[in-house]
Length: 82
Image 1 (cartoon, rainbow, N blue to C red):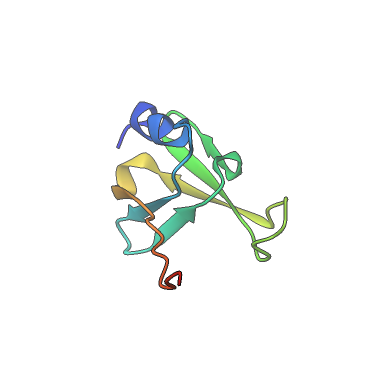
Image 2: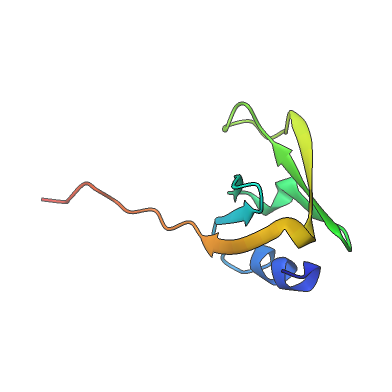
């Protein structure tokens, strides 16, 4: 994955949340593109302990060469309307 390719995902309008998988079998869910910063060779994720917070608690840095796949997070609505 290139920085340009990931930037295209992050700039989509409307934004679609994504899951970024990395080589150590960890994944990072991006539900707010404002908590991601792209560099030429690395990506920074702002990790939040409180999902409702407008601020992140700690940064995580991942090299682009370790990104194995990016996929949209599709939420399904299990409830049915009557």
